[in-house]
Image (cartoon, rainbow, N blue to C red; front, side, top):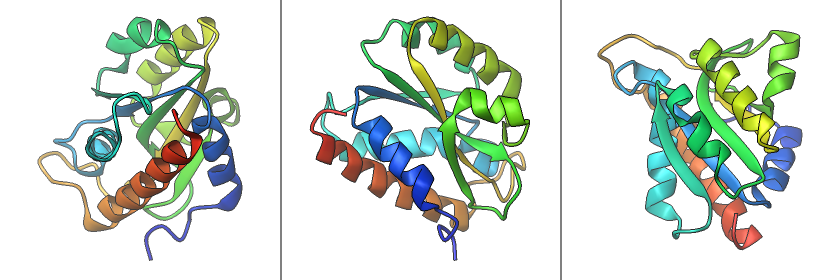
Length: 170
């Protein structure tokens, strides 16, 4: 079942990260099936959350265009949400510091180079940068999100909304 791969340790880390002022940035191309999971999740969060609970930005497939604006935000953490190429079945969710993913060479955003450069610019501003990745079932052009990945994104949206409401201000 989708979402069964949500692991406790990464979720506890995500909850701690969202307990501080955070920007969530959704990366992906909605015209390429599950690659659009980042912007989709940001859209869901915008529907559910009050203004000010977190900075929510859909950067789509040009995260580099948002590097400096995000670096100037009054937040401690930046969480990029994106489809990732990684071990595990579609719907597997991964979370951790962006630089750790780069070091082990495992999950790579489908926008790897742009995300790496964007992450470095933001980290140099003193913010901690994280990746919340979801393994896609398809990144085929012209297709909508697969039902399984949409279900995982909806589940993550509920969790994130709960974490942000619990923290008081994201």
